[in-house]
Length: 232
Image 1 (tube, rainbow, N blue to C red):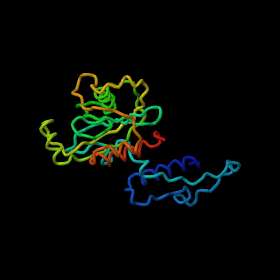
Image 2: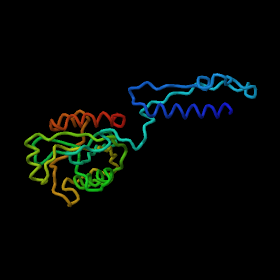
Image 3: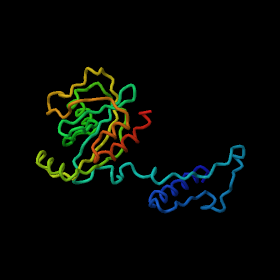
Image 4: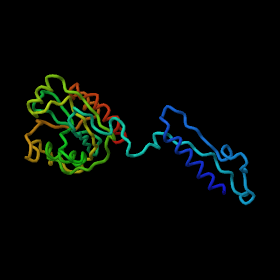
């Protein structure tokens, strides 16, 4: 058995031990000589080569299978699946519009996800339906779902409007870059849905949070924190 064969065996043993331990357990590291005491540190054939470095540990989180799901990799039950759109212009300002049904309430575009619809496609569709904007490209996304609960009076209103009693909304957020002209903005939308907004404006991140309804502010703060590298 040569040195590289031994190193591969040790690496494989280390991976299996590290992978199956929960994150709270300190992983165990092995080197070839700890498993095989009589195995030489060097072989004459390779005396001119540098001694191999000890195997580097990799975080358990990085070794986790890509198919494994954290609690917010999927939307929780009792929450309506929804997308949010953070649309920015060349000046790193964010698109916001005032709701027709809530005085002085401004928000970023958002909307429900249809059955079997990809959230990214839903974001592009909702932006077009609500604002008439189609000249935009997806730049980034929040890699997990965010939720907010409806206040009791809002929940009761939407229960009658939607015919379903949702606790709140679970949102997948996307950052889109507007690459069209402002004349493209049409708050009547594309004509497929009832208009939701009365006015629109470009805002700073602080203004976005300031003008949002209270129950959406925590989600807005987290979304803007995730997208902050693109807003500077």
